[in-house]
Image (cartoon, rainbow, N blue to C red; front, side):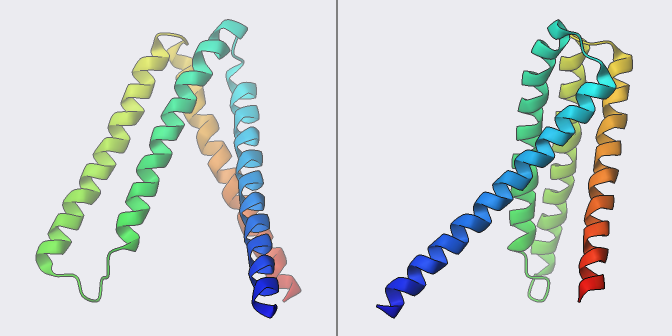
Length: 148
């Protein structure tokens, strides 16, 4: 009986935790969309063409980041051989090149629907958003540290 209760409690906590992470991710995404929308001042026609391209790009970048994280996680620096380290470096450089290629593809695609100036503004908005998120995380960490 105790095992069943413990198992159900574990499942409930895990589900709640994942739901909270999913909700948090969705809130962050909504904030990013709001900031980009505000900064770019897209027309209705531009927005209809912009968001599918931008969202597809974001998905590709996320998959690339996940794959890179997975490779780094599976690497044991204590036991890695020189040849494995060389291969890991090649993989890392390929990862960075693929990121750059995706960014270049995004710019080329966006140039067909919005002016170059708005693409530059987009880059600034993305950087601003990243700084705001990092600052918020730092503030939360500092507040949590004050409570401990």
